[in-house]
Length: 169
Ligand SMILES: Cc1cc2nc3c(=O)[nH]c(=O)nc-3n(C[C@H](O)[C@H](O)[C@H](O)COP(=O)(O)O)c2cc1C
Image 1: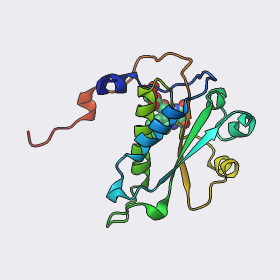
Image 2: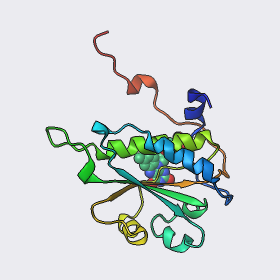
Image 3: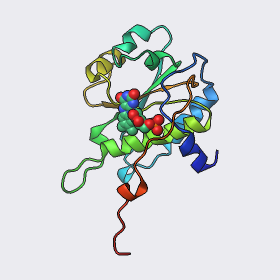
């Protein structure tokens, strides 16, 4: 897909078909994530690819929405703080890195006709317990990965004049 069509096509999918995701498509999506830039190229992330089939009930305690477990796959993007780049003033860029990785993954999925939805409002404690995530790894974002069963609404965005400030023009 042409880039501007791609970013217009992506939306938060909140209803999924149960159809499985082809292995070749999954591999491509994970490759897109792997190629994401990270601060100082530290690559401080891990992706957990979860089969939802047969685990719906326990996975729902991570994020209690019916559509969270409708898709055949769930992705959990985690940060690994010990690998992340930290600026002189101690600001850690882990969340930025993981967000870029997830955006690569999500746009690649969109390009292949798959749906996704960023999910931050999950129960971290439940995620750690159910997915066996150790203390030194931080689960930051989830997304279902599957074929959409809903249709996008209108994009609701602030005007560019509210978001962009030009200086020195
Ligand atoms: C960092 C981040 C966290 C989000 N967390 C959630 C969430 O927990 N649950 C949810 O339903 N949507 C979540 N969203 C989706 C946003 O609500 C959505 O992207 C926004 O309303 C714009 O709609 P669109 O994605 O359809 O363009 C999140 C989005 C981002 C970028």
